[in-house]
Image (cartoon, rainbow, N blue to C red; front, top):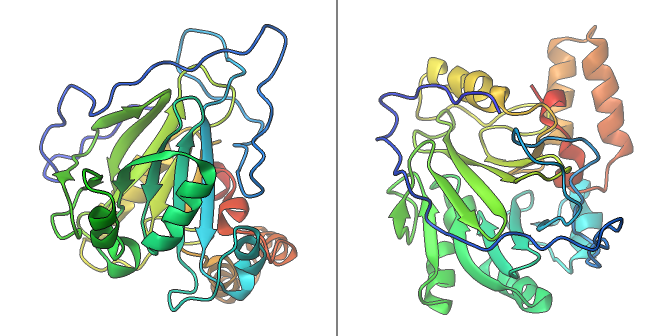
Length: 299
């Protein structure tokens, strides 16, 4: 993986020890593959390959991601698939990351805690941690209620303004639950304390994933509200842009069509934008997680 860029001035040095330690993934019998998860909205992370140097790819995949979005025209099918209903937020995504072997789960950007707990109960997993990308209410508003309902829950993020925060993360810090590794990437631009989360499994044939919040979306990025243009450039190009190109992007909002329609107005002769807009329209009704695809097509 590419060397992480220096982010001097953004955060203090990361601790040397990860916050969690977990057992390694159990391999299936030789010549077999683990069966795909039964959940209708679980996502297999593509057919590309990315792994750290050393070791052969294994077939027992530990990571599963369950997306849930508020009802809006572009994601209504995905919402129905997980039993969602219309809410004022309309286009937000929250995610549940499941370690299939330890049955540990981590939530990303809790917008509706009761709905999240319904999914946790249905999946039969143990929710231990919340990762929050930034402090805005549409990404962090559920933290307090979830912490009240689940005493001892770890609520993590990079910004002290995040509701119910139990520990502040720093750039480059690595966490682990089971076989899943998480690298915390400070990505200021939308907010000064915005953190993206890069997930991977050691020696796994499936591509890694990044939860980009409002730093990066399909066809665009979040508004620059609290940081400089240079900081936003560093976040998009030097931090997210240096991740493995096949990295799957899970963004915080469903803005695909709006972003691409705007891009076409700005550059009406851009064939790439026109093709991508056609692709997005053909995929209307899919979740943004499915529309997001690989990082190499986003930057």
